[in-house]
Structure formats: structure tokens, C-alpha cells
Amino acid sequence: MSAAQEQKHPYHLVDPSPWPIVGAFAALLLFGGTVMFMHQISGGVWLMAAGGALVLATMFLWWRDVVREAEFRGFHTPVVQIGLRYGMALFIASEVMFFAAFFWAFFNSSLFPTVYTGGIWPPKGITVFSPWDIPFLNTLILLTSGVTVTWAHHELREGNRKATAQGLALTIVLGICFTALQAYEYSNAPFSFRTELGGDGEILKGGIYTSTFFMATGFHGFHVIVGTLFLIVCLVRVLLGHFKPDHHFGFEAAAWYWHFVDVVWLFLFVCIYWWGKGGAPVH
Image (cartoon, rainbow, N blue to C red; front, side, top):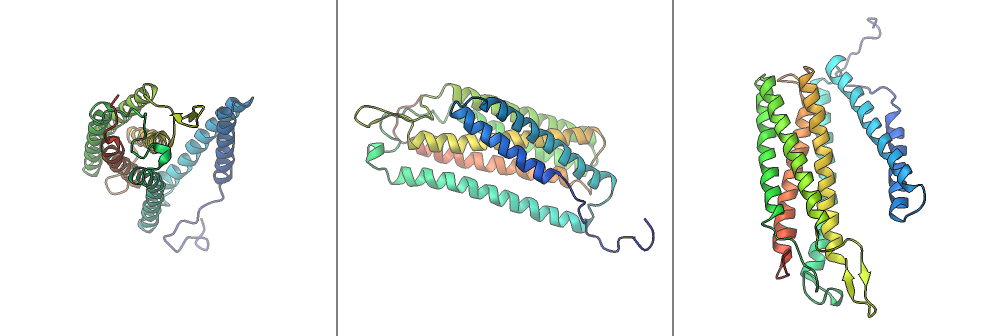
């Protein structure tokens, strides 16, 4: 770069990138394929698989470009990092709004039960999960993972890469355990997401309780999977020698996201699993 072309400001003017439009197209394929699959339309599963693969490829290539900008090209100056922190904070705030909508639906239905729920909550005929079984175990797992990721961050700031990798690896294992236990819980659920009505219009399966339960816990489970992938990327970068004690926003963003997932689960456990079970039969 010549003296005339030398950048005279600390900001990063991002190069043109194909990944936003490619990612949007991939999300469209994934969403469309998922809807077709749920409605048993031919070709839906292939469209869903293609969209999912393209989403993963976009994530990988986009992350690769951002890593190059931060680690090798020196574009993430202190001023740029402030902007990145604001961006991550606003992203988490938008995720809070998603969950606020699900909690709103749950509390609206539980605090003001209607004739469709039998005038009680949980609705008549619903058998719920015991909060002190798998949900409590998953709570302990996520709280422990919050400790391990904080430990990893502390060790990174101290320049101890080996301990950082160990803390990250433990957090990833705990995240995978959480997902596996939730999948097992779903496979043994005493209720169904799909609504089925009897001849007199009575709800036999599904309804507002199962809809809010699966949407809230399932959306959180999706966030755990995304957070686990986020941490896996950070672990690979640590093993490759990336991140410095004073320059590691990628790791910080992953840790923020993981702590957000922890906090949301605490609300889910207290509100939906424990308080929301009321006097219903326990599975």
C-alpha cells in the first residue's frame, strides 16, 4: 500500500462479501425444505438437507474471512472491537426478545386458563415432566459449563493456552451431554407437539401447553447446539495458536453467548418445568 493509499483511520471498511446473500438463500432453502418435510411433500427432505449443508458452508467460510481479518490482517483495532462488542450485545438482546415472546405465550395461557384447557393449568389430561429428573440434571450440567468456560477465559487472559483448551473442551463435552439428554427427554415425552382432537372437539394430544413447551425448550436447545459449534471453532483456533491475552473478541463473544444460554435455561427450568407443572401428574 502506497503512502497515498495508506489508511488514516482506525475503522474497518469491510470488503464486498458474497456470504450475506448466499446465507439468506441457504436459510430460504432450509426453511422451505423443512416446511415441505413437515407437510410430507415430496423432495422436502432433500431440499432441507441441501439448505442445511449450504448454511454450514456459509458459516464456515464467513467465519474464515472474519478470522483472517482479525488474526492475520490486523483489521480488528480497539475501535473496531468496541463496535463488535456492541453488535454482539444487540444480537443477544434480540435473542432475549425471541424468548420473551415464548414466555409471554406460556404465562398468558397459564395465568389465564380458558375453557380449552379445562379451566386449569397444565391443561386437563396433560402429564408433565418431573423437574427433578433430567431437567435438574441438565441444569447442573449447564451451570457447570458456565464455570468451565469462565475458567477457560481466565486462563486465556493469563496466557495459559493448555488450560484454555482444557476448559473449552470440558464446556463442549458438557454442551453435547445437555443436547443428548434433551433429545432423550423429547423421545420419551408423555405428550405430543401435534394436536389431535376427539369427536366432541376435546383436545386429546397437543394443545397450548405442548406448543409453548416445545417451542421454548426446543429453541433453547437449538441455541445450545449453535453455542457448542461456536465453542468448537474457538477450541480449534486456540489449538492453532490464535487469540492473544489482550485480543480475543471471538472467544469473548462465544462466552457471552454461552452465558446467555445458561441464564435462559434457568428461567425455563424455574418457570416451565417447576412452576408450570402445577398439580398435573408427573411423568
